[in-house]
Image (cartoon, rainbow, N blue to C red; front, side, top):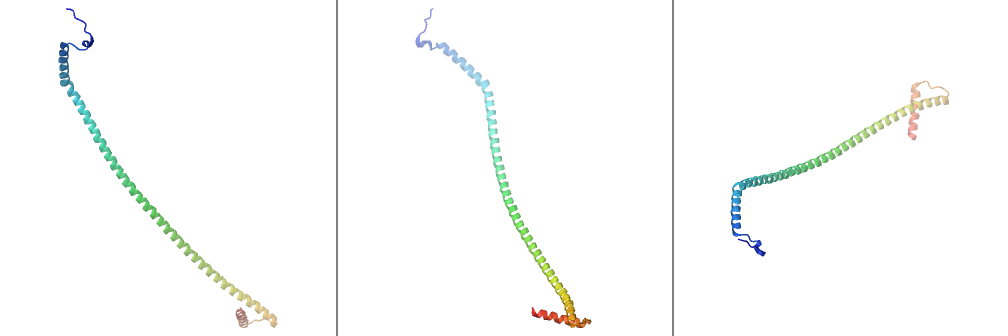
Length: 173
């Protein structure tokens, strides 16, 4: 029997026996695939899903840990800033106290130096007065001796004369 060559759309439509045998082979391959390969694929997929879930959980835990560490760090930073401000304020207060103490000591030292200088000046003034009285007395005695033409030998007379002259000079001031 001679077969006629198919033409047109019949070229694309297979024979019924080809469709049946193709379906039988497809079902056998599908059952074989489902029976042997699908459990392995499912196990691999489940394992991958578990790993992904584990990684997601780890990432979530790492994020929580990072957030906690950040909060702890910020709290420590805040505490450190407060402590630094307190230390800075304490240092300023201590510096002010040290400056005030130094100023007080300087004023006290200046007052002592001034008082000491005042006492020294007063002492030197008294010494100068005593020295001048002695010199004025000696000059007055010498002058009186020249005026009277005689030397005054008696110390009592000399002393009373000097005292009266000094009193006269002091009264004229």
